[in-house]
Image (cartoon, rainbow, N blue to C red; front, side, top):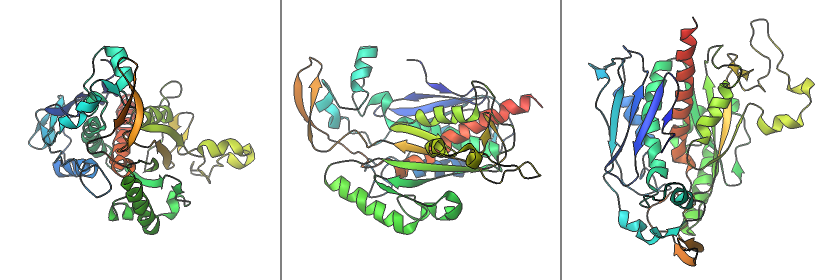
Length: 353
């Protein structure tokens, strides 16, 4: 299986399955001498881990990260950073009913056709548990970036969407509720809605928005490695993501150029920011902001029809512990992937100076 690594200079390779002994990763290219806050890294994992609230999967995993290399006396050594996150609460018997059948909108069918074999326990390698490794690497990347602030939050669940731009929100309130929406009234409505969806054995999608502040001018390359292209790739590599837009996004296609152009101030900043902090594929120093759309979780705790390996129509009902809506737990994953992209370009930029 190819495609298990991400990044050029700051590179992450992950391994492991949802119901295997552990997941883990190797981070290569991390500069030496970075004093790591290990508690901050674990805190990021705690924001992603299952079982943290009444509106997420009730699988109970501590998701404690153990570092095996690349760190000495609290600082990075410049050598590969190896880490592991043990699985401690697998219930693989919950998946025996799909051993010979394919769940709709899952990777079951394509894995079987591509590889001729699949780990059906929790989806194996296709499980969102793999993202725990990304969160570890992203937390380290954040500490390399220092003054750059990466903040994601839930801006939509189902048909409910915040109609305020991030500039009018108090982003310090994101962690004050289990939905991770910075508007408390909307968070309350979203929480009630998710609980209602779960009670029906159904699922719902949503949107995670992200804003990145204090980005220096010059990150990104102007042709194939545009900053927004790499951010898009990073976000679209996250499980269940179906869309990515930055800056004015799709709404920008409805505007006149005379309204959409970001006029300059004398210091090089811009009066508006429809560009979303990126012009010509390169950061311009303004805030970078984007939205990431997540589909409804494919596993339904209700009866539905599907097919088995022989192509026969069979009836199935989801079992196990699943998120009725992934977006509250996806917030730290979006931040992590953004940090990986920016850390990579930050190190690439240092090569030119």
